[in-house]
Image (cartoon, rainbow over all chains, first blue to last red; front, side, top):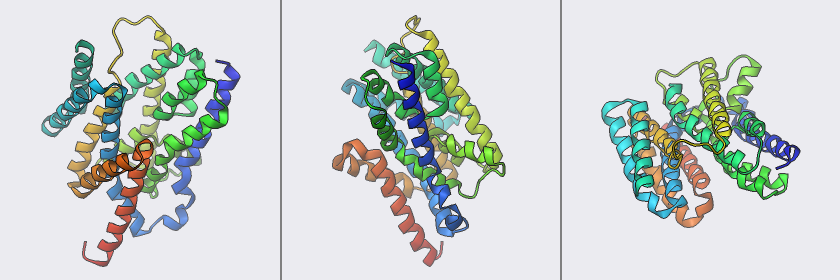
Length: 106
Length: 214
């Protein structure tokens, strides 16, 4: 990999990504204070979180089809632990260790 | 609250740095990517594309398609803009999936300055992981296979906390339904399209509830 080529790619990708993230703020004068925008902003996070959870879980299963079951079970373990114990680090660590052991030993 | 993100970002950043160097990239370019692109999914996508020597324009297009969903995130933060221009730019720049997730989950809501600080800590974890992975090169004591689950776990934790904070069932229902529909309709773009569906339904629901009593 040529460094200049990689650098150009990094600059281009980073700039595109920043512009995407800045989109809503460009129309901010018009949107700010709008109660509709506020309600949408409140409704969105749980929906987006659920989507990201589904997507990242399925993604693991798509890499290799035999990893879908361990991924789903490990996610359920994380959800259950977080609902019960409310220890984010413990939930993440337990789920990840379970998943890693399962797919490496299977 | 940056620690749960660290649990996802350090391992995942490590995997990125590791794969990047394995594909023939230099460690400082892996670092540059994590500093300037700072978007997990598109950074992973760039590795095979760079290795194949694809044109820069196609990499930019990939970044556009993969990260387009981030355009929705600012909607939740329109009224939380840091006063300092540079801080404001940084917060917008660093609005990744995970940072957005944590910021919108926290109760009470952090100040814009705290948000920017959290975003900075999260990026520091990501960069640390990248350096760690790039440094590891090929000498690995344990197998990294499966470490990427940490990210799914992080979203699981945040989904539970979102539900705890809002007690709203509707978003949790609309999301899987729209995702399933879009998976069937256009699998490659399911995530982005499902987010668009969620934004649309939230606008429709919000508009209706403003007429009635909510």
